[in-house]
Image (tube, rainbow over all chains, first blue to last red):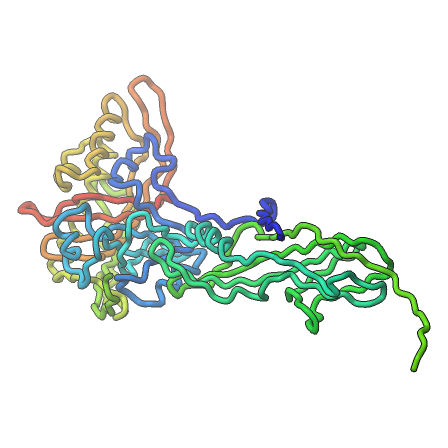
Length: 279
Length: 179
């Protein structure tokens, strides 16, 4: 049985981390900072996920919030505290947010603008990740769980012949298609594809965008020139994107997700011609 | 779950710009001559709107808040500031801090300049207003001769105001961004 190894190559990718413009920073001793009633309401600079449920405003705002890197967004409670007005829909809001969510105002400041502009409101549940970057690690965990394992094989199963192509298969589908799951109240759709890099054991390495398969599939084939026992290893590198509540697609950022098979031994024999009696 | 609502409500956006000036302590420049209210695009919702009289009163309360803030940081006198906020406003800490600074010391060059005011929502008794303002660089001098310098900042805040018998008063200021 092939043992699967998922390697997270930590050194490769650099995540675009969300930038939080925190009002409380560098505020010690400055009397002007002491007007602030809530340090948790600071603006989020970067890509913001505005929950679709209960959203009131131009639908295009949600897409802009998720994709505008240069914008600052503030998502602040529409009403202060858990008072009766909050429960009754925030003093005139036309829809009430289901408990324990609360209605939040969505404010936008585009690059170069001075102040924030009110662009809508939405229902926010406690602990909801409000940025793409905050949600991405959770998506990535699900993404890794979705990946099929390797089951590498070759043909002819009894071994290959010198100067005769051998066929290889990673034992994986070419794509996992679209997978949908719920994450922190968001509907997440993940799409993934892969590349396969084969080390044929004779100093040759080749990368394919197809997993290969049994005869007559010759997507992955290799011709050995000399006889020997060859240790063949296949590495699968997965990439993907995800869509959140119809917003995106966003890349599944982070180190590449790779699977490396243990070596399979392929015996390559020499072939010689031999005359046989004919009828 | 709550259904999706298409909010075809109109919004009133209240914009008023101020210019810097060397006015007397506590004064703020008057609202600009730009139109003080305009209809926003129809797809930008505001759940409740206020009358013109309310809007004027709310903006006046916001300006009074910043005027009183200026009086406080320029003179150390905080009574005016405390008169325009509710007793439970977290912003009361500002008055306390200013009073502490002026207890044998002073704030040199401290000033606040209101730049924009935008009413987000108002009902009969509550209003939420977005403001942008600029705080100056200043030096805090203490009674022992030491000093502490602070940088200028642009601040974006939400102000929550309540209507009381004394008029519209600030219930809370929530700083969104301090640049």
